[in-house]
Length: 279
Image (tube, helix red, strand yellow):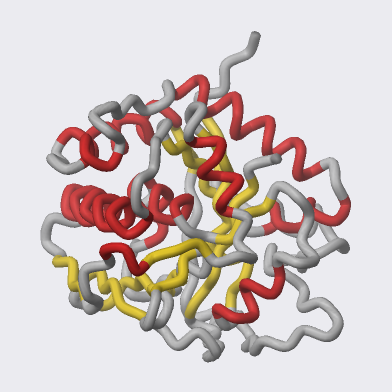
């Protein structure tokens, strides 16, 4: 069996047209959409690069290795899937997307593979707190001269999954073993969080709204997602916070900022993401 160690984040421009996504891999607004959306601010761009799966494995392992509370989130058991296994699964998912007219257009955008280890979840807020510690640690390893700024309270038990997100299925699969996926950080560029959640009613099966997938992508693809302050901000519409606005992660000139954003507000400088996990 062929093992896949290399991949690309590169968009396949002008190859996939039609379906649910445009020539940039952004979701085409469906008829009757109620939420707000704004055109993308093209001054904020991602710069894709080649992917070497063993390097992603080392990045994740380094983040976990220097991250004391990781064992709490994963109940004492953290074992990242091996690079070849991740490469095989993610390559198959990419091929699966390309065979369907409705979904193939998303491959015109930047595509970031990820893998989440098996987890028996106790509390979404506690788990997110631990994941963000991992993101901060990985970010500091990649950008030692920058800082991380956090402007939201401890999450605790106030975090739940947005009903539209389909993330319940993702977490069900995580109880049985690792889950692999492809994160498309700009698939919902310019959409408000409410509009992002609205899309799930008409998107193909196999897509989930960004939540833990995006956090793991931030952990392993910090160089792409947070290259400099000319990259978009990333919302996490798959999570909802009781009594608080959704989370927004963005790069600024001073460093990485983790903040909140009004759910009804649309901005061309922020992006909601989708992941394809192939249910």
